[in-house]
Length: 125
Image (tube, helix red, strand yellow):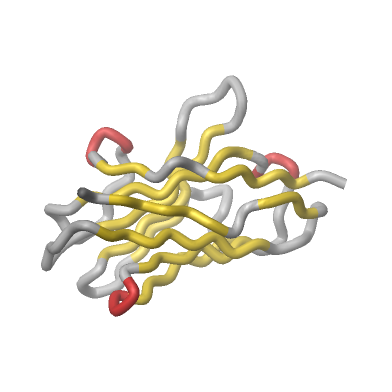
C-alpha cells in the first residue's frame, strides 16, 4: 500500500525558514514524480513544486520561485521542500503527492492518485 508521510511543518515568523519532508513507501516504480501542493482556508488546492525521480527536473509555482527549493533523495524515497523567506500568504496545509507512472513536470492535482495526510505551515508574527 502506497504511503506518503509529511513532516517538518509548524509555526514560523515572516522571513523565516522551514524544511518539509515527504517519505514515500509501498511502491516500486522506475518513473515517478512527487509534488507539493498547498491549500489555504477557503481556497483551492494549488501546486507549489514538483520533481522528477529520473533527471531531477523541477518546476515551481511563480509565487514561490526563488524562495522554495525542492530536492530528492532517491535512496531514501524522500522529497524535501526547503522554504525560505516565508510570507504570511504561504500559510496553508501542505500535501505531498505521487504519480507512480510518469517522470516529468506534472502540475495538475488530477494527475496524482496518492496523497499524504497534509501538514500545517503557519507564517505569523
